[in-house]
Image (cartoon, rainbow, N blue to C red; front, side):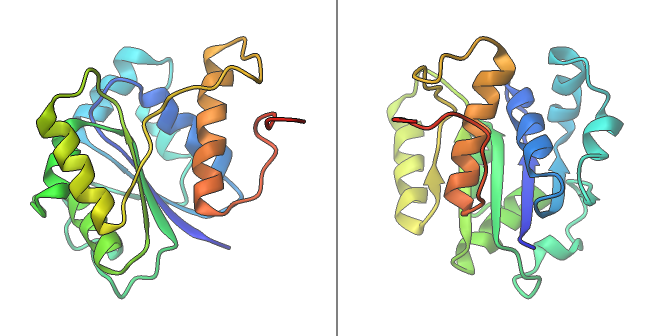
Length: 184
C-alpha cells in the first residue's frame, strides 16, 4: 500500500484537501498535517469538525512537531500533497525555510526525489509567485492549481473537488474511478 502525506495549509479551499483525504482513505497509508490556520478555515468554510477531518487519516501530526517521522528522509513516503497550498507555504518550501513540519516534510520529499504536488490556491498571481513556482518545478515539484474541468458536467462543489482529487490521484499513480474521463 502506498504511503501518502497530505498537508492542508491555511488557504481558502480546505474542502479540496478534505475530499482528497476521503478519496485516499483505505487506498493508501494516509498521513496528515493540518496547519493552525487551516484548522480555523476548516471550521469557517465547512461543516466538518477538525477531529472528523483528522479521523480520515491513519496518522496525524502536529505542524510544530519536527520530530515526526515524515520529517526524515529515512521514513519512506511515496508522495506528498499540499492542498490547498497557501502562498506562505509555497514560499517557505521554495526558500527551504523549514520552520514547521509541513515545510520540512516538503523539503525532505524534494531532496529524496519523491513526488511533491502543490495545489496552489491563489489568484491572481504576481511575478514573485510565478518565480517561486518555477523554482519548485525545476526542483521536481508538480504545481497543480485546483482548476476544474467541465467535460464531466459537474453539478456540485463535491463533483468539482472530486475531479481535482482524481487528478491528484492520477499524479500519484493511484487507480480510481473518481471522475468521468475525457472520451468515456
